[in-house]
Image (cartoon, rainbow over all chains, first blue to last red; front, side, top):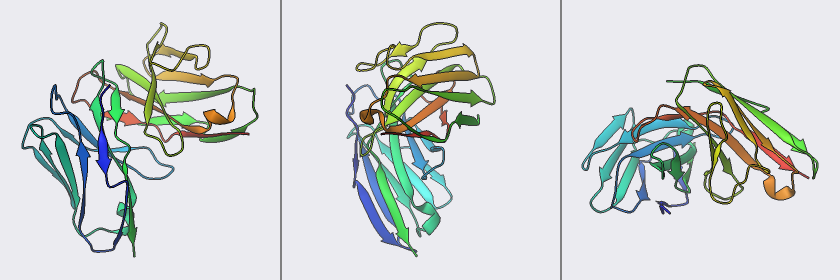
Length: 112
Length: 115
């Protein structure tokens, strides 16, 4: 069973602060890592797909890095805004390569 | 990309009843899945919905409790049968193309409360 951990579990920051959180995973048999943002009552939104060690991806104020050798990925948010408040999930292909195994998520609250 | 809709968006049900959740994708996808998130828990895969054949269930989930249909490439249903309060969860369907790095697209979820 693939064990995926995310930290912290929750985070409260002030508007304008920059923040980051971590997704940890077993470093063997890595294929891909997916980051999602899930706002309450909405569909989880795909942020990044990361496949190569050393990958860095960026989308606006959000960026992510990947270290497959040590088994972690960081998600960074620069200048947090209230609309960034959501749960951030990382996910990995499961046993059949298509279904996902999700981490427990990091719940971010950005206070105005 | 794909847009996925689900209905109902939420429901409150009595113990012992059943609820069927519908999932519609706006484009053809190879794979469709059903997930559940119980309060305070991770999103967990229930089953893979297979077109025209029986779904593939994950450990801990059985067809009698969660019958699934997928009559074509863009539509699937999940039934939560003989409900108990432990079935109170968010149920999500997803769809996408096969492949490790392919994005899965998710519906907005069905929030179920069983009394």
